[in-house]
Length: 452
Image 1 (cartoon, rainbow, N blue to C red):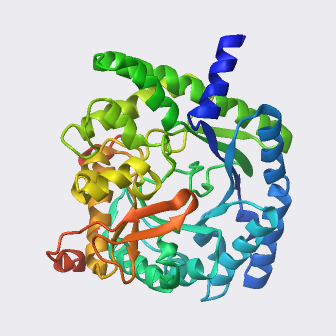
Image 2 (image 1 turned 90 degrees about the vertical axis):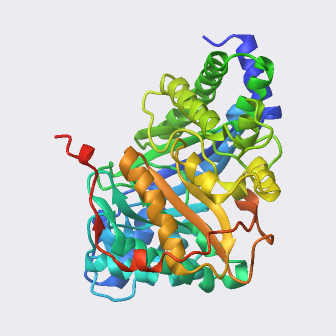
């Protein structure tokens, strides 16, 4: 039973500490939409998404109004499009992206994810066609997000796919050069991608999921930061316990919203993703949490250890507060979307190599990092390979979302607005990785993948 103190505390978290439900995401299976005729398939895709998600946005608004809980985004994820479009007799997959975009606009959602291919062990012809179409698809749509899974702990890393994705990232930047390469913000390259992730740009509705499902992503960096201010100078045991208790409270709110949305939409509840997802707003930063633990600036020595504690404590606290936890769950470190990360990058304390080290213990990877527009495709691919290796060896999800910004160089800033924020362009190593990427083939899975 909730008491008055807990209710008032939750109101304070929402009103003053940026607590919110970051997203309600409806996953929709499109396997029933497969058709040899691409026009018919696109029509079926549009109709099914609109039929399933027509009340999603209004339901989110109703819950916001009745419970006083901010729900920032309403989103849709769909079956990886390469699996659906593969049944159609066509070389051009862009119309499938246009159908998704049109359905998303009709439903009124903020994003629609699932223009995706899973190629960790090899390519189908459909995978190749979809990957080739990504730059044009993201340039011609506003709401569609794309992702490609290039590796896993069980399969190893598909280095041919890594090389291709280096070029695709560059081509996507060029195709959206008039918008500072904005298409790159809607493209993620994964290792160990999960099937129930509600966060964009990497959300897709896995083939093992139900016909439709509701997944909720919570967020509360400001709440955790505020809680840690009360334990200044205390040992790390106290810090961890404080984060755990705070994560429990945040996740309980997500569980409430998830169950209510599930009931009202007559859609099974999937998971709560108990992540600390920052925004560019002051007071809503993961970097500031790390600094509250005693670091002068995020990125200095000790940052990786602080992030490891935070990520672990968030998971431990949140898992007891929900009947089903999934997705990515932990702490995110997207540079452009975190006010403290932006400041640390501008000061030079936070660099690409340090961010890579931090991804060993966080919940995603190299996220929303701006690099110079003249960065070679092979360098982009090598960055993807490094991050995939971290995910493969550590049996965790890692991802790369690089903002390769045409015409920009180190020291410039790109502005994307909204939740995407702004980012200082960060340097990459100038030494070439071209011969390494040109080898192709597959990096074998680690020995611990043989777990049967």
